[in-house]
Length: 524
Image (cartoon, rainbow, N blue to C red; front, side):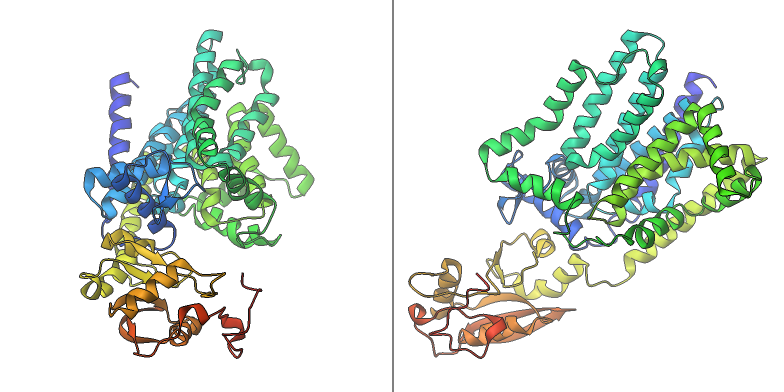
């Protein structure tokens, strides 16, 4: 295929991926919690100009590196504070990944499989769905696939100088991935490292050298060093949030049971690869005729030893899957990095199995149309997580308010994003008004209400202790409207009031105790 023709094919595939991922991007509101959290942090970054330090509730939020926030903030700047602005970075990242998957498939096969490899990834259910969700995962996978593309080009480089150049590019791309989600790049990088160890004699140059390490450190770690220097407490936060908390502990309560990978990752891999996973069973049934497990393993080992490209894909797929399965914290999109090698392997299977190109074209077209229809339908389904719908229900009552108060422990990032109003978060487990343990936020809030100012509160109606707390404080609550479990209240004084210094702790766990004399230390 001529260079101009290949460029046209790549450009066409990229445009198809971009248009498909952009369809209905603005039809569905942002969902709590992840979509609204990333979007609100990016909005606060944009309006404050705090590009180095991500903010949440206008306070430093350092649990993730800033690259995803930068991308979303750029989208919000270009397209406005809306869903289009928030989701455009993921659509672009997905489209670039589709293109890179095709380039890698082209490199690993003698046949020109790039269009089919790209289209298989484009029409795999999980990657396609993830492109419509505002998270770090789709952007992270783009950097990982780009890094593996540079790595495999370095492996096939015929000259040592050219191999060093590709590995330098790879190092920069790994650094960008580290700036997206920190140590989450290492499972995929480990697969590349094992491949190098297995085929190290065939490399023109070592992928890890002093220049490569230097480029990675400058690109990926510079932000961490700057932030830790500014906020020394961020060191422990980053380590617990991104390393120990996810790998070795259950601090996030994210499917930590040993059997969780079987009910979470296994269905994701099989069903998430629809419709292409249906081809796997037929292929293995025709290719592997040995009935015993030992014979099957020997057959697989023989295939991996003969086919370098297949070994690369197998390690790219299996090593991250094993690491993510062994980790204590598990979420469905964590294994999104295993879908690119599966798409490439599937395209190789289909090329050998399918007799006509027309059958592949028809399958791709049908699948893409089905995905777009499902995407449009899902945008119209009411959901309690839809922050735009919540804002629509609350907007007539909050448009004249300067801010919104809540005693919910869950952040209302979506309401802040759509309304543009600051949210004041007040304690919900403990209220102290003793001279020694005065809570400044509640003191100030109650003083304003006592002066006759009517405040707007968002309360979680599923937690009766929140409404009970308002009564304990001598406040009058009037329910204005509700959105699923959340209620919007107008709060004012009853006319009777307690002396603020005389109030001590009130604990929802010990409601029968005398609030003036009892000190509950269990909630402090």
